[in-house]
Image 1 (tube, rainbow, N blue to C red):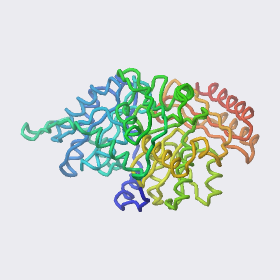
Image 2: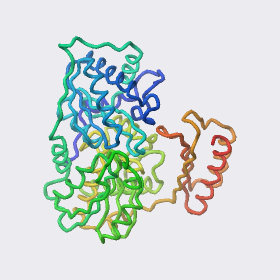
Image 3: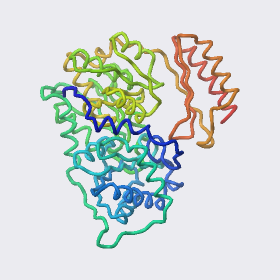
Image 4: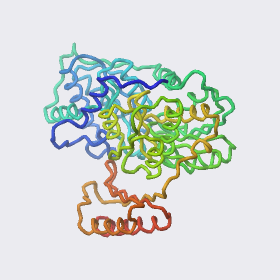
Length: 467
C-alpha cells in the first residue's frame, strides 16, 4: 500500500485526544476503563450504566449504530449483554461482532459507518481482568472531550426511552471475513508467502480464528498454537507476553519464523529461525527501513520513553527524526497526528502505521515485516541486521494499590545516583503502570551485567519505600 497523507479529519481526531480541559477523569484511564472483574467499576451494574451514558451522549450527537466486540475472556459474555442493554435503554442500536481483535473493531467501526465502537478487553492482562474502551466513528481512540461528557452523564439518574424508541441488536456474522480481507489488502498483491513455514501463537485470544487464516491465505504453511480459548486461558503462558513459548515451538518445528500476538491482537513479537526474539523496536526498524528503501516513508518516527537507544541511533543514521512519547499507543497516536507522520511504536509490540489503519495492529505489523522480507529477499534474521540494541533491563515492583506515587525524595536520589554512574551512555526510567499496581523500572546501558545490578538496586529502593 502506498503512503498517503492522513485525512484532515483523522488528524483532528488524533490531535483532539490531548486538547481537552484539565478536568480530572474519574473513570477513564489512558486506555479506557480496566480492572478486576467484580471489583468496581468492572461490575455489571456499572457497565450497564456506562452503556446507557455512552448511548445518551451519542444520541445528542446524531443517530447511528454502535459496534460491540470482545476478546475471549469469560466475562465478555456478561459485559456484552449489559452494554447492549444500556445502549438499548438510551435508544441506540448495537451490532455485535463477537470475539474480534481490537484493531478489527476499529476498522469495522469506520467501514460500517458506526457512530462508535466498543471493545470489551483487558488486552494482555489475565482472564480475571477486563475493560471497556472505545473508538470514534473514524476508528481512533475516543477523544478526551467525549470521555468527559460520558463521565458527566454517569452522574445522572439512569432513564429509559419510550418502548417504541428502544435500540435493537443484531449480530454481524461476516465480521471475521471482512477483517481478514482488509489485512491482506495492506500488502501488495505480489506478496506471496509460499515456501514459508510460520508458527502463529494467538494467546487463546481474540485473533484465534483470524490470524492464521490471513497468513495461510497468502500462501504460508501455518503451525497454530494458542487457538483454543476456553474463557480462562487467554494470555496464560502464551502469546506476545510469553515469547519463550513461540521461540521453543519455532525451533522445534524447524520453522522459518514465529509470530506471537497478545490477547486482543494489537501487539506482536516475532522470532527468527535461530530463536532470536524480535520486539517492537526491531520490528519497527525493519518496517521503517523497508519503506525508506522503497521511498514510501515520509516524516519521522515516534517511539516512547521505553524505546531502545539503539533504535534511536539507527534511525538517526538513516536521516530520520525520532521523537519519544509517553508509554501507550494513545500518546504515540497523538504525536503522529500532530506531526502528520505515519509510523510509531513501542518495544512491547504495539506498532502504529497510520498509512494503513488507525490503531496498533499486530497482524498488519507482522504482514509488513513479511513483505519487507520478500522485497529484500532476506530471512527475518538477516533483515534485522543494522540495529544494535543496548542492553535494557526491566524490573516490575508490585504495589499494594494503584495509588502509590513516585514523588519520593529517597527514590529520586537513588535514580540520580544511578544516572550519574551511567553517564551519557545509558538511561533510567521509573513509571507507574496505568493498568496494574506496578512500578516499572528500566535501566539501559552498554554492559548488561552492570545494567542489571543497577536495576535491581533501584527495585530494592522502590520496594523499601513503596512496596
